[in-house]
Image (cartoon, rainbow, N blue to C red; front, side, top):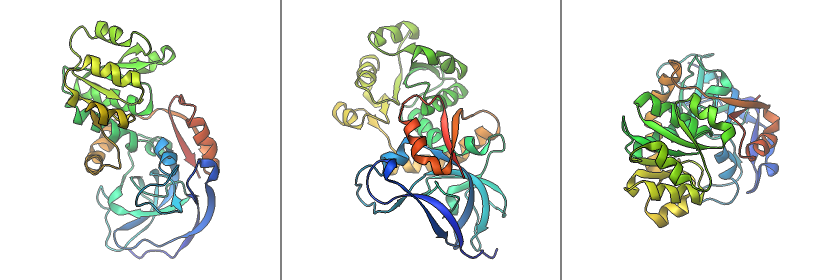
Length: 318
C-alpha cells in the first residue's frame, strides 16, 4: 500500500530531564511509514506513572528530547509497504492499539508495526489505550511467582490499576487473592474477585486469619516497606515474592523485581500481548477508567495521577 506524504501533528516532548511541568507540546511532521511501520491517528493515549518517571532524571542510553507516551489506541492512517501489524493484516481506518511505543502523547504517531494489534471492540479507545502496560505487568507478576490454581496469594495494592488487572487474571485461573486496600476501596477489590484487607499495623495477622492456610506467593504493586516486610513474614520461599516498586529492597532481600526496561520482562510482555487482547475482546478483562483529559492537559493529568488514588485509569484525548 502506498504510504502518504508527511503530515503535521502535535506531540508532547521532554526537552530536558524534569517533571511534566517542563514538557513541551510541539507541532512536528509525522514521517510517512517505511516498510515495517504504520502511522496511527491517536484517539486516546494511556497515562502511566512510567511516562513521567522515565524522563525525571538522566537514564543510560536515552537522549533528549524524549517523546512521551508508551501506549495508544486509535486508527491506522498510513501503512508502510509490504507491512503487517502484530495481529496480522490491516487496512487504513482499522482500529488498533499500540504498546511499548514512544511518543504516544500525540495526535498522530508512526511506530513499528509489530507493536500494533487490532483493538478489542469490547473496549472504548480510552480503555484500550490503558490495557496493555498494566495488563502485561500483572500477567508477569503472576507468572514469575508461579501462582497456580487453588493457591492463596497476597497482593499489595489490589485496588490500583495493576492490582485490578491481577485480580481479574487471577480469578480466571482459579487463584485466590487477598488484596490490600483502604476500606473505601474494599468494594472495588470484591468486584474483581479479591478478598480485601486493610493495610497498616497488624496486616500480617489479618492476612493470616483471612487465608486460613499458607500464603503461596506475594505480589507488591506499592513498594512500601510494610508490603515487603509482610510478604517476607508470610511467604516462605523468597523466589515467590515479586515487586514492581521496591527495587532496592528486592536486591537487599533476595526477592524478585520486574520492570519493563529489563530484557526478560520486555520479552514476556511482548509475548503475552495477544492473550490479553483476546481476554479483553471476550469481555474477561476490563479497564476501569477514572477520567479523561484533553491531550494538551498532560501535565494536569499527571498532577491528578500523582495524588496516588485516581480511582481508575486516565487517558489523554486529542
